[in-house]
Image (cartoon, rainbow, N blue to C red; front, side, top):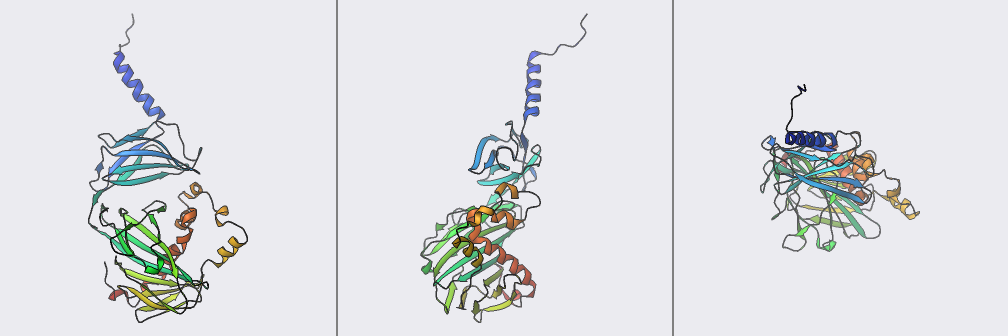
Length: 354
């Protein structure tokens, strides 16, 4: 006599499906709402495989009632490309999670946040300029904004942008904008006209953590001359950096010190606008230009992008791996310079904070 319990065929099918999904899930996890600290249902999650030709879309799914997402594709980071990239869209904002080779792909948490059109606890903590007046009568300007968001909401306002800026008329409206979200990689972003000549806005969500917006532009300039810029978005700390051979003079600027390696001089600026005399010429990239003149490409020896996305890779290395971001590396370095001298700034307490 067969005493084994009989299982209904429909139940067998459900169990087989569940076991099959669990066994073949290549990537799964949960989308967590960092504002409410609860699982986020109904969020769209997309899986990408990064390659030398760009990210390849492997499909999208919706999170269930428990905030869970499941991708059953048999993919692994580093096989056939670089890291895997998860992108969750919630409340009009994209949130990315990178999975480098060797990182777990099961039980991945992706934090998202509710969006507000007001800054909340987000603010521009630092704003700096790196000026390179060249002997050929041009000056390259790399301008950086460092955002700090200590809150639990994302500042996202497409109408007015989260950054407004003005460039001199001599720049002819030509400016390159690169943005960097917390834990992400630099992305080029096109600025939008603000409605007045030479004024622009950047539509870039400011998520909890530290974000950056970097501008790069150039203009005709001969030494000695005056550099001025009207500041639309105020920051807590305003700095300008001069390469070796260049000096800034004004009642509104004061030298904080010299960076030992590059010999660059860091100046504090009282603000709210920037205006000072520039004397001399100097470039940070003379060695790079020499290499380029010899027919060598700077990007040829850079490590591959996905090789830098590990727990041990530095922020500067990750930035340097992106070919088009080389122009703003000077701005990244300038941030390091300003941090070295911030405590010694005699005007720090006199400057308004926006």
